[in-house]
Length: 77
Image 1 (cartoon, rainbow, N blue to C red):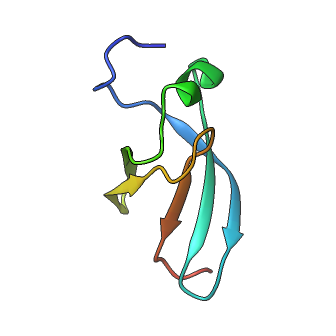
Image 2: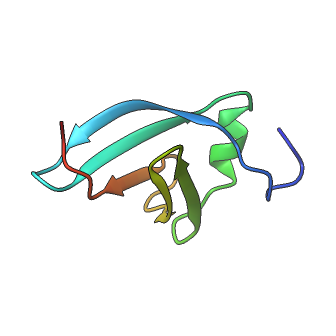
C-alpha cells in the first residue's frame, strides 16, 4: 500500500444494490493494495473522494467500519 494517503487508490464496483428508484448502494473493492489493511484504517465519520471517469466526482461518507457504502443519485438503467 502506498504510504502517501493523498495518492488516489483504484477500486472496482463489486456489487450494486438498488435501494429505491433514486438511490443505489455501491460496494467497492480496492485493487492493487492490501484491502484488509486499508479497511482497518477507515473509520465512520471520514470520507473518500469518489471519481468516475467521464461522469464526475463526489465526496462520499464512510458510514460504517469495515465497509465503504457509497450512495449515488443516478438513475438505474
